Image (cartoon, rainbow, N blue to C red):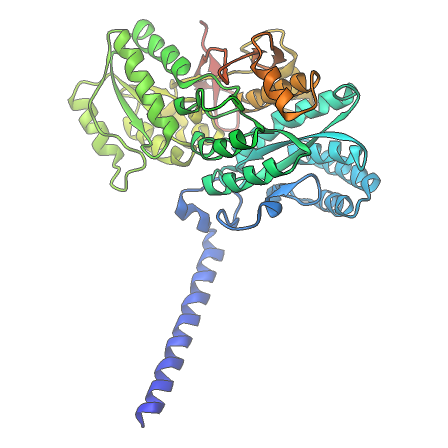
Amino acid sequence: MSQKNETKVLILSLLVTAALLGIGFWWFTRQTGVNLDSFSGSKSGQPGLDTTSGSPESRISLGDKILVTADTNPRKQAGVQAFAKGDFATATTEFQASLQSNRNDPEALIYLNNAKIGQGKGIKIVVSVPIGGNLNVAKEILRGVAQAQDEVNKSGGINGVLLQVEIANDDNASLVAKQLADNFVKDPSILAVIGHNSSDVSLAAAPEYQKGKLVMISPTSDARNLSGFGNYIFRTIPTNRSQAERLSNYATKTLGKTNIVVCLDSQSQSSQSWKEDFIAAIAANGGKVTPIECDLSAPTFNASAVMSQAISQGADGLLLLPSIERLNQAIDVAQVNQRRLALFGSSTLYTIQTLQQGQAAVNGMVLSVAWHPQAIPGNPFAGNAVKLWGGEVNWRSATAYDAAQAIITGLRQTSTREGLQQALSSPAFSANGATGTVQFSSGDRNSTAILVQIQPGESPSGFSFVPLKP
């Protein structure tokens, strides 16, 4: 055989081999259910969602496209198709029908209220959530915003003008969030943004909002670096310092735990600042943080090795500070702990995933959080949420609701971006929220954290978050 023919045969063989490998990999992922996004650390988003590409426009919807594909049904699909065509009457009917079959779908409720506005005049804001990064967290935030929109529009709107909410999917990805922020700034019809979820993403997008003079209120970003970032940047979650001090006081003064091991995600600014604030708080109470390296994001992370060191150095407590992307590693530590050390955690661990995966291993863990349905007796938010969604919501829904209420209250005074910023920044400003009165100081929420404990309860997981008495 000539060298030329041998080369052709070799090339053909390589192409066939590559094709067979590709088909084999495709078959494997289909049969095993592997989500390719999980390899980048995003294990709770929508299957098959590309978290790095796509134009900003493809990630934004007033009602013309379904972003939460996990909640797709024929009536909802018909609703977005009608909305895209400008047939708002049909869209309204279809979204109502969709909610009849799935009342716990905040995207459908937001689209329904937008469809009712149709081509009429509306006041537009945006909520940016990590649909592809963590779907449960995204829906929790959306429920708070959807409830606020539904309530204000049913009561006649803002000075007679209905509230229109645009949904954006930022995947908890900093680059995506920056692109979206630039898009929002350039759209003069948008008066405010609720978002983003993680502190790292909010910090990445904040310069765009500050430069473009567009109010951003994050319901869930608690990193210290966001404090005083700019006069257009706000948040409705208590600061890390407030949360750390509350948890430190309980650990040292109530339980007598003074030698705490801290596990954090070194890639998360929120996790790092939480640890720093906790070190200061526990030192003030006469305790200390044991100098053991426990980095949940390290490639060599070993939960068993961490626990062996903790026990040998006489630790009596364990504080878990994961980012939302490192929940699995934090739960692994809790499981290896086997309840030998008292468990504490940040509000990031307030998830269904923690209860379902952790089970008995997380029983007794105490978390510092912004809110609990039983935290403020007499506040109508919790009861109204149960009526609307068919079940209790968590602190992310409450702080998202508060972000929306702050914007609604501010927009009653003014209808401009600059005017809204001035209203929110005023010492006289206050809004009634799910977590109490909403007021800001240099963009930070004037509020304190509360403590909840994981206890056996009547839930699908067998465990629940229960508020601890002050």
